[in-house]
Image (cartoon, rainbow, N blue to C red; front, side):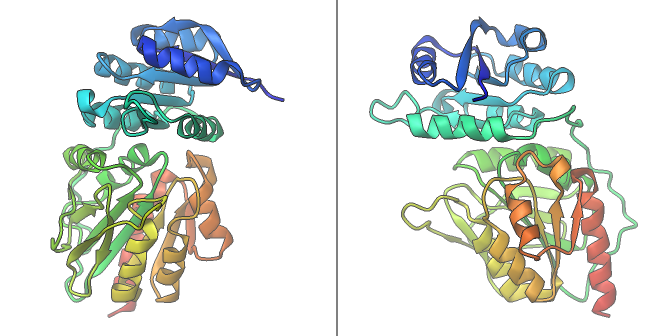
Length: 349
């Protein structure tokens, strides 16, 4: 049995004691004796080479962001964040995820009884997902919108790009959306698996980087060319035939909220062959059914390739089902979206 070395950084004492208690009796995990400050994490990770770094955000959000960026440049390592959103807010989490951290645990959100400590099963599942992730190489810095005006505008038809992403999404999205040009003639909807409050912070961050407009969607908002609407955490999002956004309360026990499939299915139904579906990094199969419907309706479908995916679960499932027209590395996804939109425009003339 492989033993995974785990290093802790900036974890407050009550939480650290709990995490150590959960991990130390499991043979597959070895807790490294050092507990490092975020400012030292980059150097210590290079020296000790842990398989996983657990990092607390409270009181050191900027230092954590810098540490994550340094680690991803020098010694790419899965990083799982711990936060108390009531104290830190969602922005530091989004910043660290965009730098390359794999995932986060809001210890209040997943409290078992006393509202402080994360649920053991949730914590262990997140550790397993982090260890299974394909963290490799330096993550490219955020691309900023290039504002290319020469790309085609689509006036005769409503074109829509539907993007679904999960684990690794914040980093992936900032390598795709900022490459889409100002004046884009297609509407965009984005579904990222993420709790309430975090999707708004992510949309705000992406909007600062993009030539297009990115915002969290609201009930009865209308899709529009050059506008990317992100499904809000805590609700499913559907698009009506007239392009209105509708929020749907999740069913009890729903695992993925917002659901990629719910959005994709509504887009396929109402926009059919005018749709480009994109499935990016993530665990599981959410979005696969929707991608099939987009393809069956005559739309185009794109999947992120394995080499650039943090978790290849969702793209792999869609590829294996035969629903994907083209597979591209992350840095080529935006150009492929533009190429497919141009092809759709020509085919509908």
